[in-house]
Image (cartoon, rainbow, N blue to C red; front, side):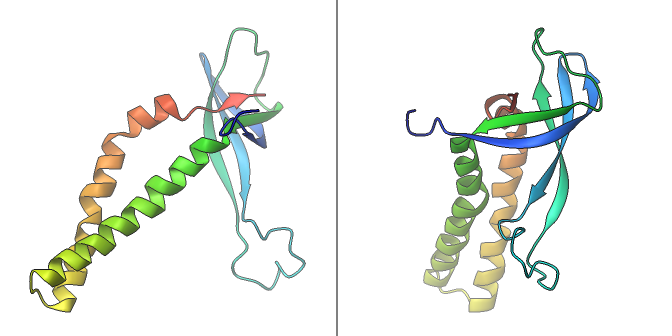
Length: 139
């Protein structure tokens, strides 16, 4: 299998079917959920997420069916880069820029944080693009 072709699987339950799309409920677990100390640790996290999946004519699923959805692992890597790495760069470079312009440290910090508003706003405006390219499939 080529690099970036690895798949990530998640078991889920079909909640709703709308035409050729289905809403699948999956349980997202933090990496430490299997730890024996999870009951006393505040880091462990479990939450339900609703994922929209394209259905093809040969998919015979109904509401309530247990299914497995999959996505390319590279999509998850891109999500981390777009959601964490690039915002960190915007924040860090903005802070350096504002300090080099001679602004006060507090004001520089506030303005650097304010730079994240257009960044995340741009991501929100590109939501349609990401929805088309970051696809989940039934296995």
